[in-house]
Image 1: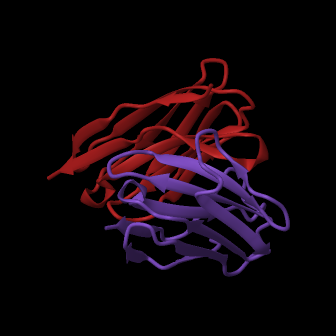
Image 2: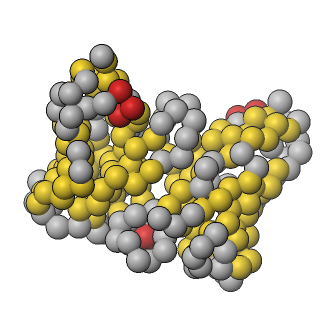
Length: 116
Length: 109
C-alpha cells in the first residue's frame, strides 16, 4: 500500500506557542490530503481538506485561523496549530488517497500533541 | 447532517465470529469503508463497499445495503490481535471520509 508519513510523532509545547506538523506522501502524489483530530477513546473528526495549490476547506466549527493548513506541493501538507492551548492537546492524523484504490484512505502515523 | 451509529463495545472469545453493525444517515453517499485502529496507532483500511452485497477479504467480510443505509463488518476466527477499535466510515463527495464513533472489540482467551 501507499505510504504517508507524519512528523513529529510526539510534541510537547508550552501554552501560547505554535506547532507545525508535516504530512508527506512518500510514494505517490496527493492533490488532496485530509486532516483529522482524535481525542482519547473518541472518533476521528475531520478538520479540513487540504488542496494542493489552493486554500484548505475547513469543516464547520474548525477555526481556520487557529489551524493553518498549507499544501505547497503534491507530496507535502502542513498543519500549524497556532497559539496552542491545553484543550488543543490531541492526536492529529493526516491522510491521503492515491486515486487507485476505491474507498481507501492511507493514514500517517499520527502526531500526539500535548500542550502544557 | 450526517451521522453513523455503531455499538460502542463488543466482547468475544478467540475463534468466535463477531458482527459489528453500522447504520448511517448522510448525503452524497459513495460507499462505506471499515478501518481498524489499535491503541495509539493510525487507522488501517480493512474493507470498502460501494455496491450492495458482501465483500470478503480473508477473515474479514463487509456487507452493505444501500436501501437500508446499513452495513456490517464480520470478523471470523477471532484472534487476540483483533482486539482493537473498528470504525465504519462513509465516503462522501470529494473523497472525504466521515467516521462513526467506533466499536471497541475485546477478544478474550
